[in-house]
Amino acid sequence: MPSLEARHLTKRYGSFVALDDASFKFEGTGAIGYLGPNGAGKTTTLKLMTRLARPTQGQAFIDEIDVTANPKRALWDVGTVIESPEPYPWQTGTAALEMVSDLRGMSRADSRVRIRELTDELDLPPLDRKTGKLSKGQRQRVVIAAALLSDPSIIILDEPTTGLDPAERVAIRNILTRLKKDRLILMSSHLLNEVTEVCDRAVFIGQGKILLNETVEAISTMYAETQVDVEFAQPVPAERFVAIGSLAKGVNMLSPTRYRIDYDGGDPTRVAILRKCIDLGPVRAYASATLNLEDAYLALLGGKSGGSSGSAPMKRE
Amino acid sequence: MARPILSDWDQFKVAAWNQVQGYYRTYRFWIIMAIILAIGGGFTIAFLVKGTAWVHSSFGATSSDYLAGTLGFISFLAIVTGAFFGGDAISTDFGTKSGYFTLALPVRRSVLLAGRYTGAFLVSMFAMAVFYAIDLFGGIYFYSFGSVPWLNFGLSYAITALFVLGILSFAFCLSSLSKSPAIGLVITILVLLVVFNIVDGLVRVLIGSQYLVYSILYADGAIGSVIGGISASSPPVWEASIIMAVYAVLFIAIALALYHRAET
Image 1: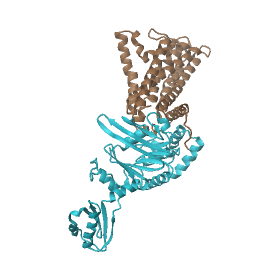
Image 2 (image 1 turned 180 degrees about the vertical axis):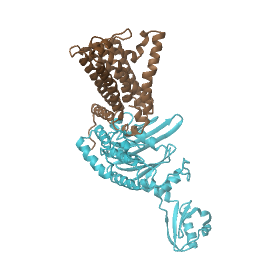
Image 3 (image 1 turned 135 degrees about the horizontal axis):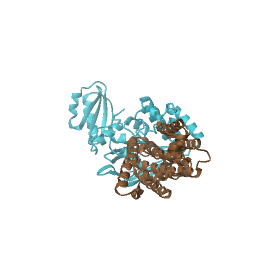
Image 4 (image 1 turned 30 degrees about the vertical axis):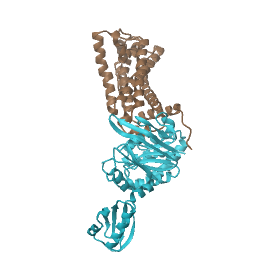
């Protein structure tokens, strides 16, 4: 069963702590989204997991093998795309992919079959061209193909769709969604909807510390519990919500008939808000807001509820 | 199910072969070949124009004199070749994003380095062989096939191989200290062709040539002297070999240590 584990991973550059005592363990199959603002420690974590950097303290394990002590064995069944890698510019696409397949012990016949498959799946550019002559997006697709070439059980991706156009992103997402059924994928991304679509679990990191490690579903529920959506049968002016008074922490108009109300205080408050809403107009629906990762992200890292980072929120696709 | 882990030896062969292929795919290989053909071919054509009598009076009565004299270019060519093929061997991984592509693969860095070093050595020696072949052609044409000191000529090529190893190690070492592929290449050429010559000259004048044992440029005198044309400043073959071997081992060991610890 594939596994990825960080045990108290810490990385310091002088006095700057890039990663602070990060621990997690993922086993089995599925996709994990690794989320945080720029400089939060996402790429550092992935570098430590792939021996591109050495931990100051702690250990990284892949399939129970210490990455620092035995990187070759640990990474044997792992495909990676870290920090927008680029093949050597003098290599043609074919040469770059064949170098990877040769180093991974694939036969030339297997390699050619796999390259053909990936050419179709990823719409790879002409592979007889030098990679230095390819566009950024084309190079990125070659790099993703290299990561998937040996059909690894574990895939570690650092913002894999960076530089790709929307259609290419969708293609990569579809591939990852298919692959996660029998592989373990750890991917960092700035695109929260990408993580929502692909990942089963999300890890939030801010200022080098892991803040939350939960299933996407649980995170949505966790943050939806303090928000409620109310839908009226007819438009209700926003100013009439003054009547709700201190029960609500905030009211956002979603449409003239729909409002999202933030509250604090549990079920009694929620019931009291419903009573006030009924006074405002005929209520058609009243339910917990369905939140996405962006809300959780903003709550954790955008300073809304004690997140440790004051960084700018992540952009949404 | 994951395929069996490939041995270090097999991965070494892949790394070496890729390095060789890489050189043939870059302009630098053809630039080196052009320099070698320009120097070796250009001078040989000039000698052909001047005629055999002129060659004999200029170089000497034996093919050994001719071969030793014309091999004086080898040092320059080996330095330029070593710098071109070794000056960015490591910095290319850390000065560009190529390191993220290669270093996250399941292969030991020592294996990658050994493969690159071997690839650089093989291509460099091919370039040197072209110059030796041109030189040999002149020796046979202007003198005779039978007059060529084959054993010593072969020994000279072997010493050149050792010299190239030393130069490549030095270039790899400088490359591991630089983040920019271009800077590693330029610094290697500058240090070996300019700095070493200045320091060697100062030491020779101020202290004495017996103290030049630190210098690989002093050692390269054995490349020609082993064929003939021994001068007072030529080191004995054994001494030159030791200096070159020390360069080869010491600097590649430093390069390996730095490469092993380097982070992307």
